[in-house]
Length: 141
Image (cartoon, rainbow, N blue to C red; front, side, top):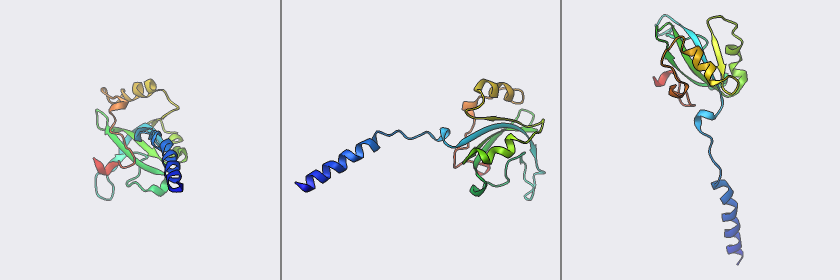
């Protein structure tokens, strides 16, 4: 009897866990989309990469991953950066550079992002971004 009561309580305790929905990957963490110039000479020591992105992703700096698409002319990039928290994105948000346009998910309107990005890439759509996810980054390209 005690064993049946225990088994019933365990089963009833698990039911709420089964009914929980998992948050989709693209809605986790802090995300930023930015239009930035490309930098680097293309050598091993100085790889070509978007401005304000790390040469390699290290979790201790708060940036979990990033991905990018080149603009139509190849001189700039549309970057999606995934960070653990907004603090890690502050250097980009506060860059104060005329050649950097940054948009924060949840703060800026999707239409504003697409309108600005289409100035450098005509067929851009946010939903077609490669999506950095937490396993993405420049090494997956």
